[in-house]
Picture: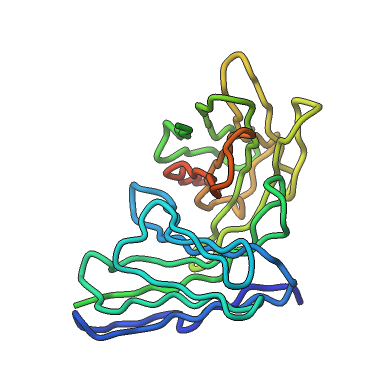
Length: 113
Length: 116
């Protein structure tokens, strides 16, 4: 089954404790991205990657890091999480080409205390 | 700069009635337009898209959307609502001339509630 998987699905952590949210897709998509969803703000893009070893900032990159060492994986790293990063996070992937729709993972609900 | 507006936070419709979820956009060039749906505790799912051609686009689950260039709108419609259509709906836009950045902008979402 074609899918985007994320882990963990739920995470409660404390300020300053480094964490990684993994994302993997099995559709051989070159493009991957991370979004955060907050009430009243919709989805905002954090980072995206056009291909292996190619990443770029989205609209809200502060406090986040990403890497793209393999085509299928695109982890999101919070080096020193803060409470304002409490949010619902989605990973997405798509085929190359702006006209193609994105496939989203199930989401990771992160709470930073 | 591009933007998307979904003017209604919530839309309530009786089952069996037609539904409309509104979306307006602003781009400097021609738009690529998308609708996604999010069911509770799930990721977003693609419904339909407008790239070019026929202004009426048909998508999944019986939904359709009409592109109106003069009104810069891309409203989502369905002739007869089902209770299972209750979900959060997002409109998204990208300017065809957006350049190298990803540039897909999402609206804030509209909660669609279908009452039995």
